[in-house]
Image 1: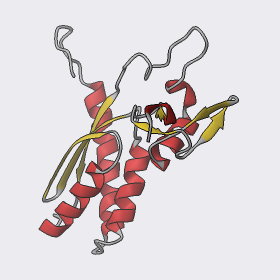
Image 2: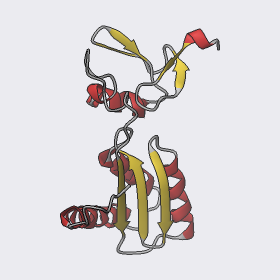
Image 3: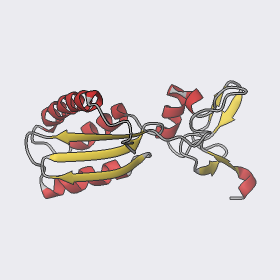
Length: 163
């Protein structure tokens, strides 16, 4: 494919064919590398394209890193760890994954993937794992929400900057 037949996916920045996962927004055509990027764009288009005279966060090169730790009531099998790890790494915007026993830690760019999308992917993948996965995941997400609230309330030194 020639370079003039490609456009940049506004969500992830990949070069794609002009008509891949195409959508028209405000009478402008956009193409995406995947349904994930297309859906993300349609949910929040002005995170990626801004307004005339006002650049979008993505256009300015901003990233919004989030880290979630899920603590399951029961450890995953080694096979389950591999399955979950692979699935999470395949999602656009996920920058690191650690799956070990009863813990799943995910770091991701909120401009490319949301916690809701991660939950859906985990639930769909977990259906193959069986063993009460849905309930284990639900409890882990509740615990994660509480931990996130606690961490957000913590006072930090004005000279300490978190990445």
